[in-house]
Length: 417
Image (cartoon, rainbow, N blue to C red; front, side, top):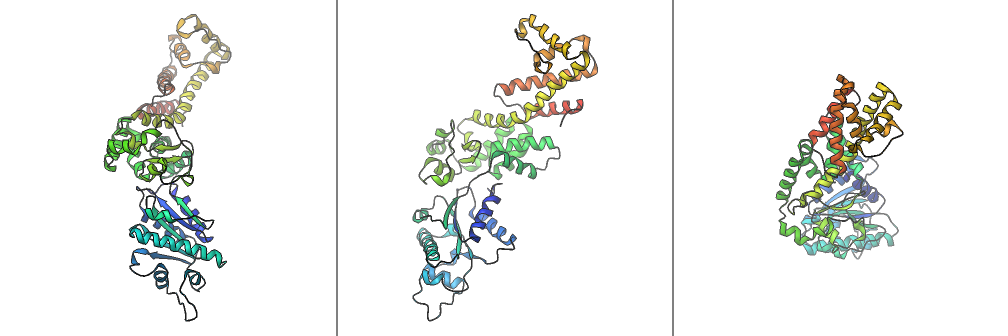
């Protein structure tokens, strides 16, 4: 899951390393630590200003203390005058790297994980005492590693959870740049729905990208397939306790949580994702085995409404403009107000032609007296827009085919995106 927020997190990590701050990056179970390490390494080598960067492969440490392993790895020349071989003396030796990526930490046995993190904290303290800036480490660990319990963060040693800090709008914008659809409206639709359903998970986004163009059923089919591949049974999900978070949202950042907190634990399992707009949400695929499809429908709806409603209203306003061109604004106001005689339209009156509702415009445009080719085309688009509006107004998502049909009609009329 190299998410679109990854580049910003990696930049922040590398900037901190360059400033002498150690980062312990903790990732959930559905993130590959080596992918994060590669991203950090790649970013460092892209920056010409960052020169002294080294990679240390931790599984090569088979015996001895972390100090001796570190010394041998970087050919530290202790010299006869430097004794004993302590961390305080180590940081005062010449030729140490400034930034060190301690790679494959997750492959170490638990006892060595704790020893290495103890060593990293000792280096952090020794660097502060010696009034020097380096070395600084980057270590990528799973959030559930028991070894992390020994960590005590300081101003120069940060624990960074790997999760999305972007807004959903930013994720959509990033997706629009990635998606291959040539049509801008289709690409915007695709990005909005994928972002709402997949959040920051690129693997899920890749699976859903074709589905959101096809149908709601295809979306459900892909989410069920993803759920099967993840291997969580209904019992697993119920035991994990995700149902307590499906009706409300928390906006508390992971940095303020403890590993035993429910949201932190579910994030570690890959069952929750975060956006600035909606806070913490259960990931969409995990809702399917529990039969919570109405929540998935809501996520489809919330993405659709901001795209579709402006287009729907554009159809209404275009019909108003057409009718005003036919008989004038005052005429249209009178026509709408004359409809109040029918109980179908209630008793409301309007003062501006632009306030005319769909049902009123359909009744006027459907009059044989105004029957022209243009009027027929407008009426077809207006009826479809009205139907779509009613679905969305009742919190029901529409099918992609309806949106694209409306878009096609609007473009044929000459006023669409």
